[in-house]
Amino acid sequence: ICLSETLIRVHEQGGVAIAAHPMAGGMGMKSLKPHSILKALMHPVASKALIGIETYNGTAIDRMSNHYARIFANTLDIAHTGSSDAHIIDTIGFGATEFPGTTAIELLNALHERTTRVRKMNEWSAFRVMSSWGFRYLEGMFMRLTGLAYQKA
Image (tube, rainbow, N blue to C red):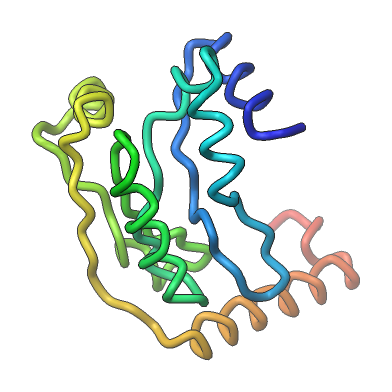
């Protein structure tokens, strides 16, 4: 389903959403595009759910996508978030969202008030990110093909 329909469903269930790694590319990744986000922000219901854009992804293969996402988000009245998008343990914490407070409610308030800040930590090269993902993918495929993934320890 399209982004607007997804956001309508999120809103109907009382949730909110962050547009994750918009404009990201690499390894065949399909990501949210500016026109989809703009369309959602113009929708009377979908816009209530979409309260932030990830403007920093610590494991982005395409580093320029972070730059483009930040420029795009700066043109909108929306919160900026950061994350590590960690698919492996070693990359947890490469990016984060800072906000005034420590609770989930305070985070939600900061997103609505647009007082979040992006924190950048380590960055791996695109080669290192791709090779670590590739290794984990092949390892998982081997485990599934041999049945080892389904055996209990």
